[in-house]
Every structure is written in structure tokens, then in C-alpha cells.
Amino acid sequence: ETHANKTISQSTPHNMPDILAAMSAGVAARLVCHPLDTIKARAQMGAGAVSLRGLYRGLPAALSGSPAVALYLGGFQAAKEVLEKTPFVGNRPALVDLGGGLAAEALSCVVFVPVDVVKERMQVARPSAPSLSPSAPEPPRYSSSGDAFRKILQQEGVRGIYKGYGATLLAFGPFSALYFALYEHLKRHLLSNSPSTLSKDSQLPAPSSSSALEASPKHDAELSTTNNSNNDAENPSLPSKTPERPLTLGESILCAAGAGSIASIATNPLDLVKLRLQVQRGRGEYHGVLHGLRAVVTAEGFLGLFRGSLARVAFHVPNVAITFTAFEQFKKWYG
Image 1: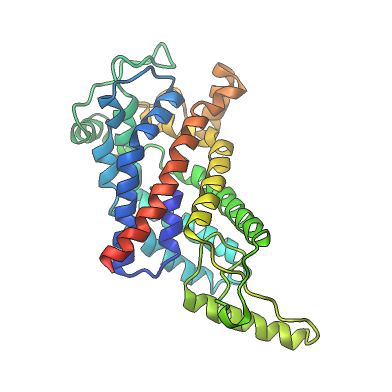
Image 2: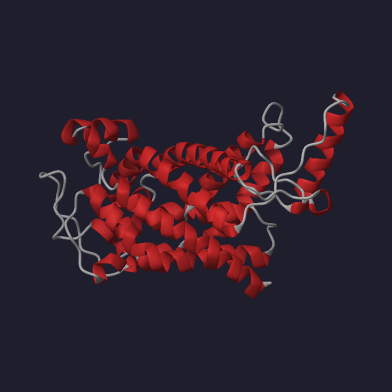
């Protein structure tokens, strides 16, 4: 699941039409952008070219993880409600969002990690694909996503299916922190340079300025009222601030694509090692994230950590655009 899907999901009430819209938007984006994800995975593994049909290897596995969006949303909402009542964290929305995201990721990864392992093995583990380790055994050939799941479970057990669980969480944290911070920065930049401001008669509740997630109108109204009353009581001489207008669909796509692109490049080393941990069989040549990072630098140089980073960006940008646009359309259909 991409951050575009999580961002739009977290920005809406958690009712069934919105959950279905988020899931459907993720599926639509995956159908179009899966080949780019395959190119990224093969670039990070140093694998060779693949046929047009091969670009869609692992697609069924990727699509099977879509229902876990509901698991993520439920976990995110539950974690946020707890964190909002926690001292120190509760009055810092950015920490609440990040903590809620990490907790939700830990829960949803029960489904997402096996899906990722099968998908990535299908994408890169082909007999014709050269291994980065000459001494490594020839990877098995899988006839389908179901066949890959059965063989991994039989040959490597449950630990094989959940390879890279910790690495997934470790990669998610820095990516999310960068993504949400950059999204918010780009949003403020767009709004500060926008000639369009709301008149006093048409003011809408302002979104929370400390989170990249757009809050619900009810929450924004309560937050705006509380903040304004507090500011007036403490500083009666200060003029009231004009609330920011909400982002348009195009601006949301632009902010999400820009933030995701920069965060994708910056955290590519973690994503690369995560993928290699999930693809390797048995104990393998990497014994953890830190060991994997050192091993890549030793064998391939510092730039080796950024293998596939441009392909990762090439996947993220259209995925964001399709997900946001499809989400709005599916909301109308399901609503």
C-alpha cells in the first residue's frame, strides 16, 4: 500500500464507503503502475531485463493485500485516540500522526509483509536473473503467486513468509516522517503563494497545519474554534487569522508527489535492504538492516544504496495521481 492511499484514507471519516473507495483506488493504481514497481525491484536486485508479461509478475499477490487497508485504518484510528490522550504526545499532532501510522503499520504488516515477500520474489526471483552473490543458490521458479506462497511456507516456514517485518517497520518510520513533513511544507508554500484566499463570508475551517493528513471538517471546526478562543483570551490585541483554504485535488496530488519523490530517494537505502532481506532464502548474505547497509556499501559502493531510486520515484508519482483521482471518483460511486 502506498502513502498516497494512506494519506487519502486517513483524511476521511472511517465509514464503509470511504474504506471501499480507498481500497478500490489502491487497486486501480496498482493495475496501472505495477510494471514500474517491478522495474524498481529488479533494479534494486541488479536483475536483468524482463519481458512485458514479466512486468506483471506478482500482481495477484499485490492485489490480495488490498483488504488490509481496512486493518490499517482501524489500527490508525485506535492508536490516534490513545495517543491524543497521552501526555506530551497528545498536544503534538505530528507525533500523534507518526505514532498512529507506526502502530497501524505494525498491525497491517501482518498481512502486508507476506504479500510483499511473495510479490517481490515473483518480481525478481527468476532463474535467468543474475544474483548479486555468485555463491548464492539458484532461486526457485514460481509458477504463480499461490505457488510462491506455498513453496516459501514449505521451504522456509512462517519466518520465511514474514522476512523483513522489522525492516519494513524501520523503513516506514523515516519515510513517513520525511513524507509528512515535506507534504506539509509544500502545502504551506502553495497556500502562502496562492492569490486565492477565502473571504470572511466564505471561510471554511482550516486544516491542521502540523500534519500532512487533512482532518475531517468537524475536527477542523472544533480545532479552529478552540484555537481562536484561546488566542483571543491570551492576546486580545491580536487580529484573528484568516483560515487557510483547503487544497484542490491537483494541489494535493502535487504535494503528495513531490513529498513522496524526495522521501523515496532519501530512504531508498532502507527500502533496498528491506527488499533484499525479503527476497533472500535461508539465512542469506544479509543478517539485518545495518549489516545489509554495510554489505551494500562494501560490495557496490555508496551509490549502490540508491539502486532503483529513480524507478521508485517513477512508480510513486503516477501512483499518487491515479490514487487521488480514483479515490474521488470511487467515493461518488460508493456514496
